[in-house]
Image 1 (cartoon, rainbow, N blue to C red):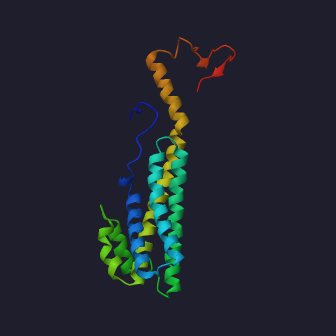
Image 2 (cartoon, one colour):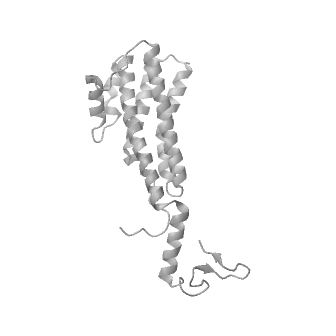
Image 3 (cartoon, rainbow, N blue to C red):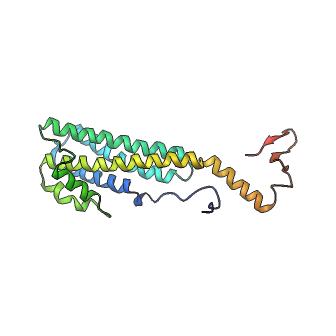
Length: 211
């Protein structure tokens, strides 16, 4: 596939990321959970909602930052992953404190939620009835299943970002490649102010390497 002109690649488009779609469901479900099961003024509400929001919003920021900084994209994606891990621990704490059971990953209930969560185009609407009518144990376990799915997607996303960086580099490498293409297209790669060996022959800077 030919390399695109310029050095800022297409970026944004976070709404198409499965990790974002899952994190958005987790955020909406967490908001409902806190309203139903936690007392007003409980600091846990702010902590859980903020962790859920951070998981979602850092995916957005990472997607937008990817145009000019692969390092920032990787860092923000990892922040999203860490925030959801924090939220996962909060839900486990909720079950333990309330003396409720954590579903076994192979249980009928967990398999049902995982299957529903894996459907194309799934959204919070598919879980709204459960979130608004089922008891604490069920809603918390649904959230845990969905967070596991989101974390799996983010782990896979981070591995892909790492591989892409090792293969193609970051902004500096893209800028250098774009400049070389421009020079080659204009014929400046072999004559003009630059030497044939790719060095800048400006006075006072003998042999300075052109990026």
